Length: 345
Image (cartoon, rainbow, N blue to C red; front, top):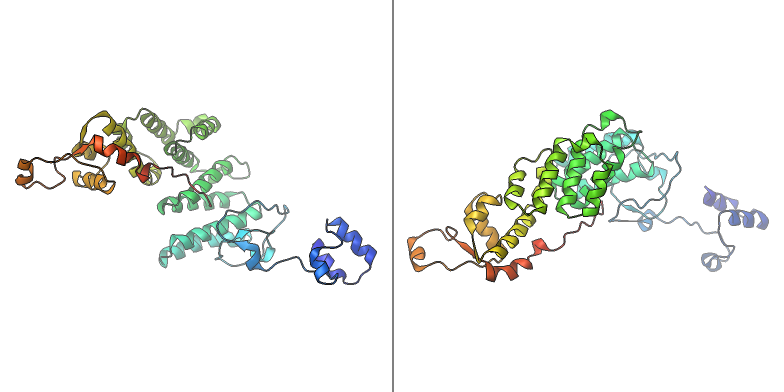
């Protein structure tokens, strides 16, 4: 508002102009003014130059009563690099329509996750700048987290489940909007476990109520954490089949990494390891699938005897990993490299 007042002053006197400039922290002579012969230049840039892609809303503070005026159900997500404008932000009633609209359109028109993910981020951004934290906010973040898991987007998933932990604890969010609270506490807890974030695990557990700790999801998650800690791989993959809520969808994104961790430990304990055991105990559909997985990651196998070769058995049956030759390759496997999430959200 102050900047608009500056523009409207025109030649309204040196004293008034200097006083107004001082009040808004502007210098009497900017480089732009020098180049323009002392004229007051409009500081607002074009939309294209004030916004860029690839980041969550970066915490521009808005007035408590800031309400957008846009009626667009769809909106391209752009990172804010300047204070938001009312005409570019959708108010809550429009956002309530936009959420089901973009999800429905993505399904009917087979839109890519990039399109839908950007639409979800734009909705979240519009809520953020208007400080909307209510039942709609929870619904948006829950839907966004679900969709992110389905599409393997751990960045958006991480942002959403972290924010849900905050929203579930707010008194401004009605209790009937928190029906999935225990579910998402458990899902986030499992996410922290598979990423080995010990400090965050302790913090998360310390913030949970007794009710949340005894929920089926948390009880399962604790069993899973202990099995991983003990490297009880048979139990780890057995637990895969009994995971509640949407935990199986999350674990699916980490399944191969967990398998490779298990195989690396196994080959350290024996000179040779049967592919069939790996197939039966690490969640593979068949011995053939386990053999193909090992081949894809350059595992080395014990040579088969001439008799076995002449028997006509499929190449995957009766095979053993050559531990000594495989270990150096498996140690450098890309699945085991750090996969920290770059959570652009």
